[in-house]
Image (cartoon, rainbow, N blue to C red; front, side, top):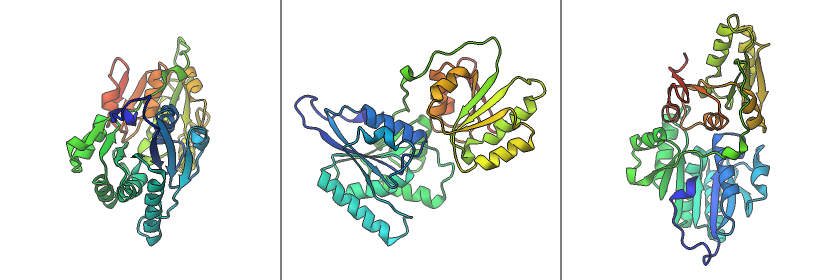
Length: 323
């Protein structure tokens, strides 16, 4: 987890260290899963953890409510607005008032907003993040985030691929720390072995870079030769209606099930036989890690952090993107 790099003194004698963990929101996603677990797992005898959001909302907000000293919101509607400057100043004042010692920003928007505000406040330790490989960022957004990283004490990458992207963007190697995503293996049920393969599952938000189209096309291609196969797509997003229409167009609506957001993913994985991740871009995907923790073989695109995660022939199979 992201605070493994800190050496913050004796456990017993020191007072609580005020920490702020900054996310855009608590909508379900890989970053939000990792950070909500970090918030829950940090030792409250050592850390007083505040949660900062640009939008104080999301299905996973209740996960952190009972662990956070406070949950505060600094809502904005874009960076190119004077109101955002006022909000950054308000955030800096809040950091001073709460005597924040460690600020950890977790995604593009919180990196840009929070690292500048933390620097204005004089927060001693400011940790930025790189948890994706820029699949949907404009050149202007990449430049803006690169500028924000100049205000960071360290930038945590969640995979070698993400760390490499940081270095190509000009972040000094001495400032980059690689800490892979973690998973609580005890949360996953023992796999039920079956003599045949029946259920193919994927767990990923319905975003363009996740490339669910390739899985739907594969389902159509296999429908006649493997009629017993069923496909479960777990995750929510704005592309659901588009993907459901695509499944209907391919004639596989009866075998491809869209389950939406689910809180029982470990049970779903335990009942499945193969995990598939056809993404065009991945840093270090939680879905694949959790599938491996559940004992599932993974069929995935040979991109980004999946090249470090999957050993073809032993833990799964890597294939060319969009194949």
